[in-house]
Amino acid sequence: MRPPSLAPLLALLVAAQGCASVRASSVPTADDVLPYHRGAVTVRALSDPPNARELGAVEASSEEGLDALVEAFVEQVRGLGGNVARIDTVTPVVETRMRPTTQSVPCFGIRFQAGCSQSYLTPEEVAVVRLVGRALRVEAP
Amino acid sequence: MRPALPLLVLVALCTGCGSTYVQRFVLGAPGAPHARPVRTILAGDPVPPSRAVALVQATGRGLNADLPHIIAGLRAEAQRLGCDAVVQVRIARAHSTATATGFAVRWGAAQDATTTPTPAATVAAPWAPPPPLPAATPAPSGDGAPPPWSAP
Image 1 (cartoon, rainbow over the protein chains, first blue to last red):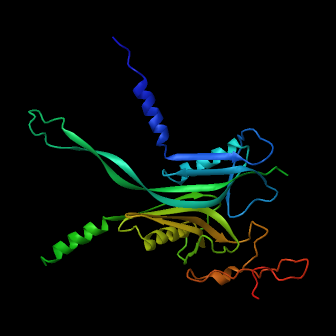
Image 2: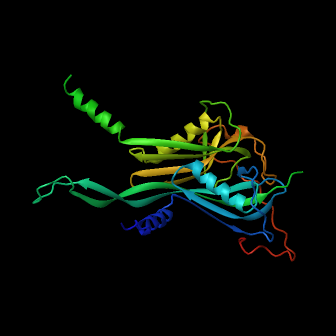
Image 3: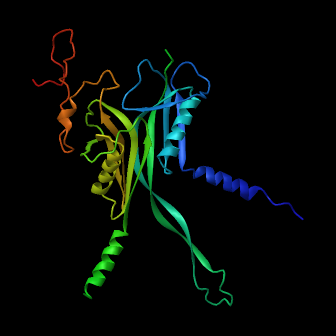
């Protein structure tokens, strides 16, 4: 008996990564690189905390809701060693995606009609929110 | 009596054709819910001194995919959080979906030291224009020549 091939599973994983609904990235802007911050991170908007040191720029986008979006944003801030996630701008976007839809259809000329279906793509509008901000570090007094 | 039935069915169908979904991520301590008017300040307009309470998003679909529904959703969420305004509001709209994001804030001491304090009493009404910007101080010029953007 031939063992099942892993190729379809790998292809599915790659495709799933390409369609992830939460994406985030960051780039350090400070000279020194701090280790991953495992402590608490304060999410802040509208103003910078006093005596904050900028560590890098962070962006995140999600269509799964604000909780997942901010969580991904904070994770990037932790990766830069920051303890303050400063949100500069929040931008909503409505994107149009093509969603595969399968519909059962009558099978003409076939005796057994149980498995006849057709697949097609239907447009679907998705609300995506994008955060852009910075990773900051505030040392305890 | 009979003509009212199709009308009722039509109303029931239409009310089911639109929905507004509101979500939030709390950033600070919310206040007590209220029914006061909530001011809306679009992104790019000056924001009076305030404290961010939550990041809010309202999404309208179908018949609710328009500005009144999503702004009403943001304002209702701000009222539930005890906030005075929704600031930095940005809007996106497509064919059957509209969404808006912003920060629900409470008027208060500015956390940013560079912001000029503005009395909260001047922004009581939600339709009130934004407060005036502080007077710009002219940039010092060494030779006394007018800046290049000044009128001749």
